[in-house]
Amino acid sequence: MSEPPFVPREKLIEKQKYFQSIHKHTYLKGRYDMITSVAIPLALAGSALFLIGRGIYNMSHGIGKKE
Image (cartoon, rainbow, N blue to C red; front, side, top):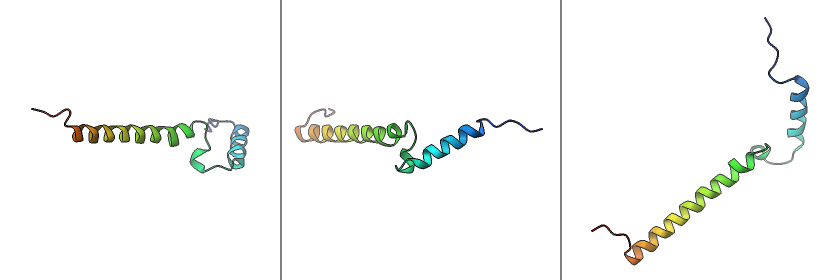
């Protein structure tokens, strides 16, 4: 028993031509790839740098010590 493909063959060929024609890096070719590959890592790096800077500031000024 043969099952029909999930995506029609014409749509698959159309998407293959689209992705092969784009001259970007492979991990940035999709629609939401810029968000997952660029924005999220930048946000994590920015928040990490902020927390490190705040910790260094607090240590140098003696703020937030436990008694």
